[in-house]
Structure formats: structure tokens, C-alpha cells
Length: 200
Image (cartoon, rainbow, N blue to C red; front, side, top):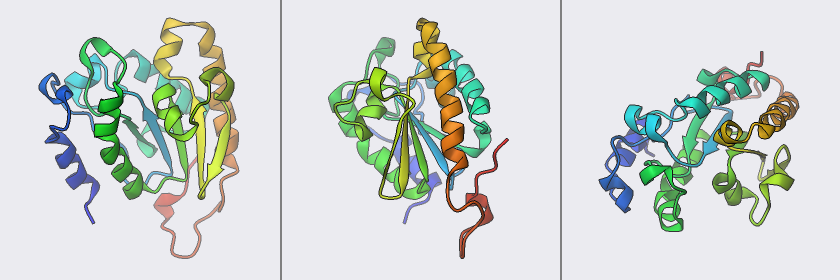
């Protein structure tokens, strides 16, 4: 079984779609490989492409604020995107690009085994809430196969549409409530302490 480090190396060498020709750096994702909570965005932007890290631009700054509202620290969650390379001019990911990157995201989820997956934006939302409208599903969650899936707007949306900021802040507070109800509250038999969520 590959480790996250090995997977990141494989992602870094990926040539599965044309985005590989335009990228400055691949952005696999970051965070503890045993994170309880996994955040999945859409695609890297300019700042992410330059640094090779997810959510480091203005949208990332707002995400950091939302994490605090949700009772989380950035260093305790894993953050990645549906696709790992920046689309030209920050355009939306194409279906072929999402499909090409899907095995990477699938493998990340297999390795992390999160208890909660938070979708940020419509492309990651579509993976778990097919056919749903973001305006209807944001701030709501479903549980499937022991994993809680929680839908949120993409933080960048709030930068362009200020009315969404309050909705996202409220959704972060709702996420905090969902996280507080996770079971077990303490480490179970054979479960390492690092898998337990330490809330603010």
C-alpha cells in the first residue's frame, strides 16, 4: 500500500491531461494523513499554482476563518482539490480533467479514511450530492457508509458575492455542531489518539 508521500510523488509526475503542460506546480493537498476531516475544493488558483499548496490565496484566508468558526485548526485537517493542477485563467475544471484526476482523489480518500468530508463548491459537491443545487444543499449533510458528507459554498464565492459570506459563516457553525456529535467521543479499541478530533 502506498503512503501519502509516495502518492504525492505520483501526482507530481502526472501527465494524464493537458493541464500538466501549463502548471507551475502540482497541488496534491496537505494535512495529516490520518485527518478526521477532509476538505475538498475545486482546483488550484494562481497562488496555489505558485506555491504547490492548496488554499493559500484570498479564498484560503477566508477558509482559515471558517475553520476557526467550525472549531478546527488548519493543521489538523486535510485540504485538497478535485483536480490537482490550475486550469488556465482559473477557468472551471473540464469533465475530462475531473475524470483524469479522479483516481488521485480516490486514493487520497482511501489513505486518509476521513470521518467527515466537507465539499467546497459545486464540483466536489457533485461527487456526493449528484443533481443537487448548491443553494439548496449548502449547510446540509448526509451520512453514507459511515462517513458524513457536508456541503458548503466555495470560499472564493464569498469573495465575489458578499451576501454569501454570512451563509458560509453560518454553515461553518453548523459544521461545528455536526463535528461535536461524532462518535466515538474518545478513542475506541485500537484507535490511535491522533484520530480523535480536538475541538477549540
